[in-house]
Length: 210
Image (tube, rainbow, N blue to C red; front, side):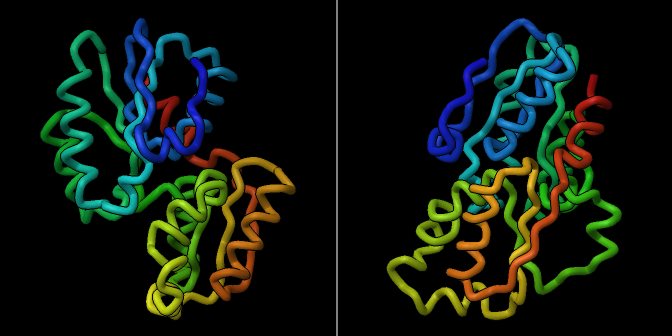
């Protein structure tokens, strides 16, 4: 399966292939990591379909988008697994998944399962803002332009004035991405911390969905 560009994953998502018995329905921000896990584990039984990553800027839309995708695509699959955590939906996504009888990743959001959910929650880092590899590459699209800070600089303090540190949860050991994350922290006026998490609990969640 060819990986679309980050722009396409942000705006359109990714269409699934056919032939597997398990459908993983995921956020476009996780496409690269899930495809890597499919390849390294030779999961020939898994098909991946991704919704647009930009939905994370509008979390109230995620539950119904997931519902529509599951209803449209579940025929012919033995199992559907939703590769989203709660992602700001206030429990609505979990309720939709329960109604549809499909499983999803536990935890509040992807930052938590990359970092390890229990460890993440134990830190109680209420003053930290998080980036993953994908969000680092798409910082301008999601944050700087997506929140209109580029046109209205005064919004930066409104959105980020209570944060102290940008924490980069790195899935890969990439110096270029680390430099981009540092630049993002500087633009936001925040301190910087990097944690090399790898895929965290994403791998075990997908393994359990076999």
